[in-house]
Length: 473
Image (tube, rainbow, N blue to C red; front, side):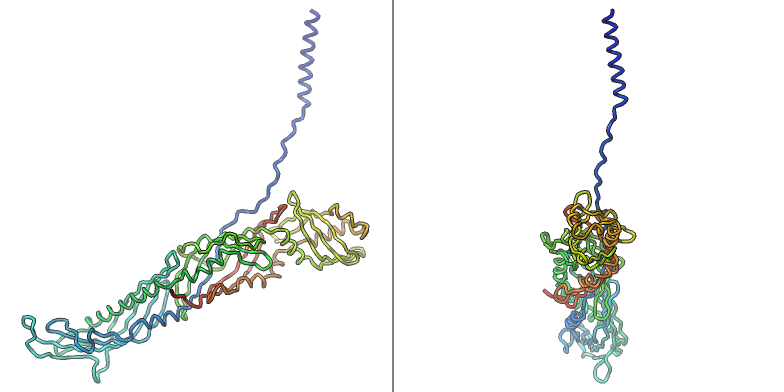
């Protein structure tokens, strides 16, 4: 009985102990997942640029293809249209007048024509009477007047070839030719013959235009856009074009004008190597609206490039605190873990040496400034305490450094705008030039990595392409 009570006591003791230990046990919370920073999603960029093609030389060649004079077959002999009627005509045109609106070219010309005809009486397909002659525009009689206009509809194919459909639009006789003594108005027949001849000329024009190789014109552009484009000291840009569109074509002052649009996803890096170069522009597609360019690009910079930018920005900035004067001479940056960097600042002045600081650079989207609000002295800086004195390490000096370690993106852009814009004004190839400039540069994101710095930048501006000459085959 005693043993049974003792066993019961031990069981209760174990239960009580277990319950007490359970109530006092602390369950550790799971560690928070490490923060992973990334740039915002990259929006599609659009470059809409006006294109001007000097087409006047081609128009002069096109006019040479058109005969100045159109005559009936066998001129100056007669052309028999039947047993009882024969005729001959001659048409002399003026120079061409070109216009183009919304992909339709109109070619207008004036002309003069003369006609002569003869009529007889036929029996069983044999002439049995003398020919009776009549004419308009021969001798002292002035040639009759006629106005003619051609139209040609233009469009580009997906492989950047130009196609046209040229034909007579209107042909209007100002002076009709009525040969009264055999009561026959032959104006319509003559105009039909002239129209057929001009339509044949239009086919020749279409064939000549179809041989124009615009793909040859754009091939160097495609190759250059497939390569990295230098952006002064800001690295190298690759467009990564995904789509090309064209607006309506118009003609003025000897030039064809239209708007070209390129959709792309650009990349910027400090690496100038071209390992993957696209040789051609993507297929040509539909219409566009708007003008100018709006480029958003993700940029990756190594710390050597960051060193150069910061040194250019901060060099020669001076401090004067409690008699200690220093001037920043050089800045070097090294990536650390947890989105931090180490700054190594070489300075001259009352004392000279190198400061080591650590901090986490931050981008203020509203003010477009990059600051290091948690900038602190690195332990490596203690080695120069004896060189410049403890005064230099007080909080006032550190606060000054925080204020100076600030990059205003807008100010930096304005300072380098001329240099940046120079990259948008260049000769792309023989007879092909780009002109333009930027209007604004902003940063949309900043990520500090141990090996590099990632930035998303947005730049807007205007750009124009001029093609001074057209290639042939």
